[in-house]
Each structure stands twice: as C-alpha cells, then as structure tokens.
Length: 173
Image (cartoon, rainbow, N blue to C red; front, side):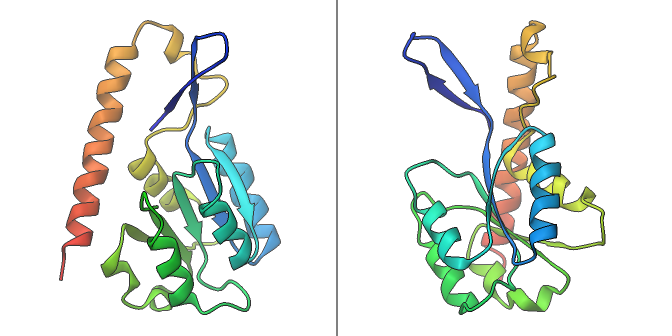
C-alpha cells in the first residue's frame, strides 16, 4: 500500500506505509525500527501506551501497529479496544513470545499474531508485507523501469490476499 500525495508543485509523490512499533524493550524497538525502515517503511517508535494512543489518533496517517502486549502500566485489553475503536480501523500485529498474552482479542479485530523468535524477523516481515505490501526502498528502481502496471497488479493481488486473510480471521468463530 503506497500512498500517493500531491506536492505544492502539483506532481504526485509516493509515500511508503507508516508503522508504529510499540515495545517496552528499547533494544527490540530500535532493532525493529532499523530493520523495518530498511525494508522501505516509515517507522515510528512508541515505548508507552500513552505514546501509542497519541500516535494512533494523531494527525499523521498510520497504516499498521506492531505491538508487544507487555507495555508497562497499562490494562492491555482496554488499550487494544481503544486502538480498535479508531476510524479507520488500524490493523495490529501482536509481536510476542507467548500467544496467550493476547487472549481472545485476535477474534474481534483486524489483528494478527507473530511469535518473537530471537533475532529472526522473517515471520514478522512476511506478515507486514502481507498486510501492507512491499515498502518503498530508496534503491528500488522498479518504479522507473516502466513496470508500473505490473507492479500495481501485484500490489492489488497482495492487498486482496490480505483482505481475504483479514475476513477469514475476523469472521471465524
């Protein structure tokens, strides 16, 4: 999902998707920020629930939240409901060692679970790509190669697959 914006000059500019990473551990937050930004996404870190809510409801558009349910001093189900009440609804990827921390929350929203596995981000990056499509890397020359129609079709297929996955998860039960 690449956003198209108009500059003052009248030409359009593509902006990569924006992701909030909320994790209490500074080292994990910085690692995720560095790696996900390198994949071409705009990444905004949050280390508290208050920061997360301020960013999610802020004036700048956000496309995804990656959330460790172990944020300090917060009633996690209440925090999650507040994120889910945002319009438009914001997809959330729970990134945790233990799925039980999310309880039944995954049933009621556009949310997904990815288990933390040491230093490996393979599962998390796969989920981010499924939800948002590929990021916009600075060294990505495909936009200039005349393959825009093919790239748009690929992104549309990925977005359709993501939507189907969302619908299946949302309506299961």
